[in-house]
Amino acid sequence: MSSNRHYLSSAPIWRSLVHLCVPMIAGFSVGSVYNIINAGFIGSLHSTPLLAALTFSLPVFALLMAVGGVFGVGGGTYVSRLLGSQDQEDADPAATAATAERIKQVSSFTLWGALVAGAVIGVVGLIFATPLAVAVGATGASVAPTALYIGAMFAFAPVYVAAFALEQLVRAEGAAVASMTGLIASTIANLLFDVLFILVLGWGVLGAGIALGLSNLVTVGYYAWWLSRRSETTSLALRHFRADRSMLATVFGVGVSELLMSSFLIVTTLVMNWIAIGYGASLLAAMGVALRISQLPEMICMGVFLGAIPLFAYAFGARDRGRLTKAITGSAVAIAGVTAVFSTIVFVFRDQVFALFSADPSVIADGTLILTAMLVSTLFNGFTGLIIAVFQATEQMRNATIMSVAQGVLFIPIVLLADALFGMGGVIWSMTVTEALCFALGAVLFARSRRALNAPSAEAAAQALATA
Image (cartoon, rainbow, N blue to C red; front, side, top):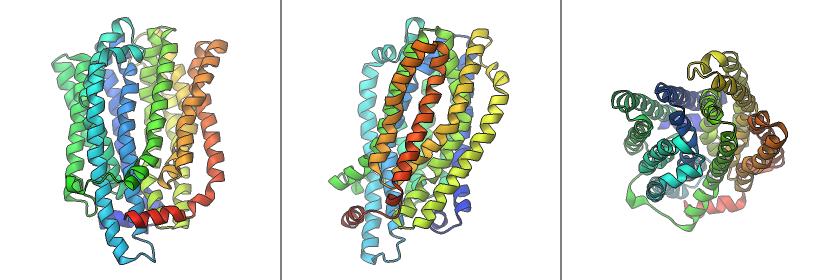
């Protein structure tokens, strides 16, 4: 733990970013590659309805990750800020000890709150799996496989939510290598389970859903072991569970931006599915495959700004403006480089890669166009994600919330107008236009909120002392 804390508190910025972000990039990249392989497993069954079911299920997966984000991002950034407050030059020993107890309470609340929320959502989702399949856009032959996949997801809902929440707690201490280990272990387990359930047992999308759930159970087990045995600050014990007003306000105040962002992502995905299905099943299947291919550069950018969140929060809690500014600048430079290099590579080989997933000429033609639009979007969404990460880490709840709802609010009128004026081409490029506008909004909000990065407000500092 001491070496992890060193990277948050005093190591050179680039060394800290490498330590925190490279393992995140590795973990996310492996997961992204797995998503491509998973689509390949389903694609090998030569069934467009089965492949489309993976696309229809994305809103459900986003919902589960959103709930995990409420607890994980809210609790994780809270822990990092509390750790940083212990590093202040004028920190009182008694307050430091109280802060250590508060960290245990936050981490316990994060786990048990996530499990309860996941269980409630899982029960409701299982009951309404088929109506939800129809609601997310599945029709005809796609309804049954979509309902099966969604049902499998909801059966493992507590596992998904807890996995995401615990991963944020591990990273909150700067333990990026442990975070990466959990992600890679999950990916390897997922691959093995896919072979068993899809290729050997022939369970199709149901097998894919069960494989995904079991692999996340592996992740939960590993993170719970690490936090219980290796962490010197956190506790998952139920005896430390607290749900006082300050806890709820701080965790949910930050975490709600994740929920809103993912909720609007669900809305935009549903709207896109409803519009795209009007152009035929091949377009929808092409969208699903293109999304998985474009995830590689996107996941690398996510690895940078998500990996750096604990560094932002720790520096903010320690009132170290200089280190916070350097961390934000370094992350922005890294994202720019990643976007330029990897998006170019994927773009150059887009035809060859896409042909691996389908022999249907219409799917390939639509897919390469969609992939081009998605890769252009990465020029904007990496920086947008960084801005949101800074707002979350520094408790700028209003700005984080505005950014979280902006995409959904902007996308719906843009895609409807683009569909009416430009047809399928307009639909495909509508998300790119939305991402560009969101980035512009984020840049304006960030420029106007620079003073908030100086240090926690007097109210926030008083709250930290009162609740620590």
